[in-house]
Amino acid sequence: MAEKKKGFGYTKLPYRYVTLYKDGAWDNGVLSEDENVVINESASVLQYAQTCFEGMKAYKTKEGKAVCFRPDLNAKRMEETCIRLKMPVIPEDKFIDAVKQVVKANIDYIPSYEEGGSLYIRPFMIGTSPVIPILPATEYQFRIYCSPVGYYFGGGVNALKLQVSDYDRAAPHGTGNIKAGLNYAMSLYVTMQAHENGFDENVYLDPATRTFIEETGGANLIFVSKDGKLIVPKSDSILPSITRRSLVAIAKDYFGIEVEERQVRLEELADFAECGMCGTAAVLSPVKMISDHGKEYNFTIEEDGYGKILGQLRKTLTGIQVGDIEAPKGWVVDID
Ligand SMILES: *Cc1c(COP(=O)(O)O)cnc(C)c1O
Image (tube, rainbow, N blue to C red; front, side, top):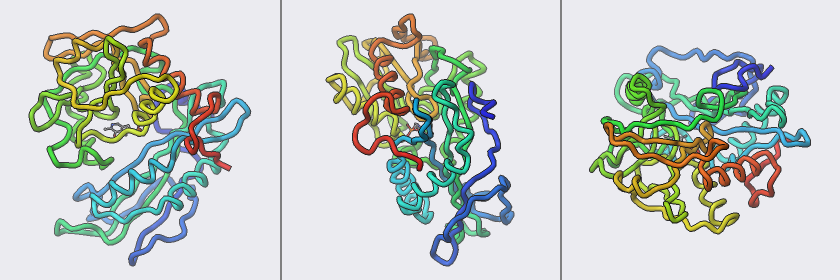
């Protein structure tokens, strides 16, 4: 059980949730023991990448209760993604009910509070009916599977090194702000390039002018300025991370930290003291260095492996997620 708790891999668990869309309506949905998806060879997901996903986590509290973090925001973001990809929307109550069902069915696989991992929850939707013209499918599957996970980056707290990419993540007025599968296929080449160059990930710049910081391939970037403000890059082509939005609220409401959400120029990195990557998978991973073609921007890391302010924000966020610290209303949802 939970043998993958230190890493971030797929483990087949007993149950996944499946609901089918046909003739303009979703069916009731079932829990299935079959991890395989059998679809037509000309399904829109296979030909034109008509697919999108979400990512969230369930945790065990100290008392052993199963909870998940802000699933309403994942439901809302998936709705926006589906609208943009001409896919049918999963109503928020159906989405949250499905999350609860599938987590409950696999409840023995949520790592314990003491182990410190979580159950990663992956909702996704695919177009299943055959297409040849470039048009949306008429039939869809929405599924949610789960997998026990630990750290996303290399099994522990490791301050990361990033490189500024020569490639773009998203086109101007494109799909960077939605969780569409197509946004990740094109990043694989660039990610492997970063690894070959000795970096953990890429920093993408704004696709129109390549002067402003956007984000990494799967996590938003946040910074702390030398005078202690939280600086959050703003752009229409950044994926609106729920972790990032939560950290901004924590910085303001729990610590009284001033937050600036605005465009951030690449050269401004020289004025920043701390940098972190945030997302469900990355949580808030410390970044020690960003290299722009050999020009290095360095950030402070304390003895515990984190920056001073971002370390505090991370501790508060994870404390809220496992129920140790009182959460703002609605953030932590009981599974049963
Ligand atoms: C999913 C994702 C994030 C993180 O979003 P969370 O809601 O915090 O998990 C950030 N950037 C990209 C590109 C993503 O796909």
